[in-house]
Image (cartoon, rainbow, N blue to C red; front, side):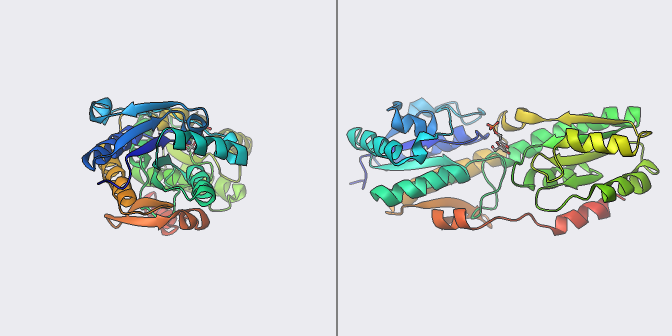
Length: 326
Ligand code: F6P
């Protein structure tokens, strides 16, 4: 006898390539345990508005390779209120959904933690965000694909930068974290990276660009995480243009292309493993945890921990970048 007759699955927060692969894994793992699955559309908003669909093995066929999320996603303000969560709980009970798998990021797990606490309701989280900023997993679903998308774009930028002997400021996503910026900077051989985790000194940047870059290199790329304390790429480039008027500079903001596209092999693999692990955790009577992958092994991390602990970038990689770009 399965411990639950029916479970629900939803995606919430910013979408990430590999979310579909995770949905597929959740559905098929649940079916293999004899449980029925309800898909909840538009994240927590769908819980509140009864936006439910039945999912069977065949409903999730041919989606492993697709970007986005077939269940759609949203950031629900109403779920942050007690009334909203009460409506959600009533809808779950009425639909016979006895446990939930939520796929998303930090905000998704904050909502889930409060909900499990209020209603003693089993919820297991799967980390899905391109930002990779979740404590309790080495990689989040979507991060690897986003890195590949960015590297591909910057390689193209490098071609034109070289031809025109220009400096490009390329802004990548990462409102609160520099994981994307730092990893892509190394992978693209960028001359500099600016991340929210460190204080950006624009005077130092100017000196570095004049002394170490302009004089010795025909092209240059500075990667700016959108959440950098000195501003976005446009703002920083404007300041540098004033300081170094003879340096030909351009700005590219990669924007939401970073969140789209077919998931990489790694993201499909990660999503498949974690989707199955989430269902197995529920079957094992676990609740209020996120499943992650640490040192290639599945880990169960309480929501409390993923929310409380800040995952930091590996700061030694900043030095590595300077060694490599001399
Ligand atoms: O998915 C996370 C993230 O990519 C952040 O890095 C970024 O700031 C944010 O989403 C932007 O998302 P949206 O445009 O959907 O608000």
